[in-house]
Length: 361
Image 1 (cartoon, helix red, strand yellow):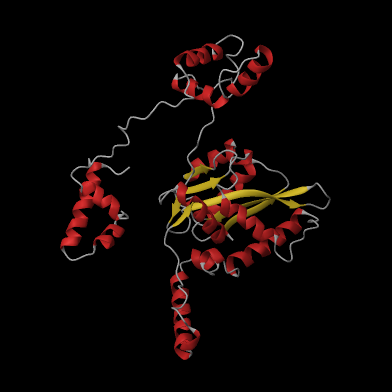
Image 2: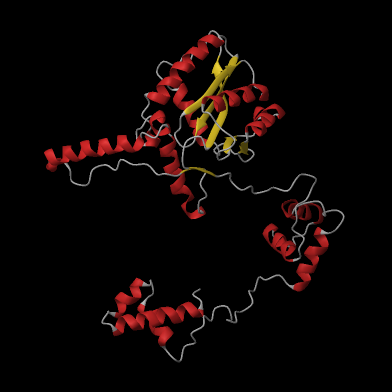
């Protein structure tokens, strides 16, 4: 429904456009209003206010009577049914007492109107948790980390790869392999990564995002983060895609052609392979999410110079053979802001999820 104030403004704008020479149907189309609606608004015999809220409508023939509503309240509050949901009350009434008082949805509606449709049982009430969102405008502002399995020498035996990724540049800033998962191992990795990247507590606080695994919440890791001035961030419980970039790099790692899918013979062998992969990923891998820069180029601020050179090459190619270019050259640039789990409207959730999936790879 369009409020009365908006109707007056729209009608005045259309009249002004008509007085200035515009066609009525064109002016109405600009405001997404039909000519018939505009004519009805201008008719002095028609009330300008929307009459739907005050319209008198006939009572539905199948509406519950006050006596039926009272009976529903009496049944759901009885000792026999007070702990049961309507989905169980309705069939039990039919089986045990041979009667039908209302449908499950009608009982739910009556209970809600009476303020009785509350959470039952000793279990905690479901909560809708706000998604954790972070923004990075430069390297070493937001890190993401996770743990994945690496196959061992025999089936069922695994090593654990701990890996930290920078949100802004997607650079691997720290990694290590251990035979077990623990918060103590994680704290060692964080200290090594902070030392490698010369993280200082005097600068903007660094955010370290992870899921809710046991090593991510251990006391030794929390103590290390506090000493280093690093802010801990967690994904929502039981939500697997709140840490998408950390999950994505594990797929990139394990789908390398030389990945030893039959297993590593020892931890030193696994560390040597991951060391070579890290060098390849940081210095050679042209990341599609970075417009085909390497993570190290983005991390060290070389992106503007490289994109400028690419643009010059493409412009020269178009000038040499303009017939092959029907449109402008490719845009070589990146956004200055990189978001982890950006807030989004529900109406655009599907489209933005598809775009995120493209940029993660």
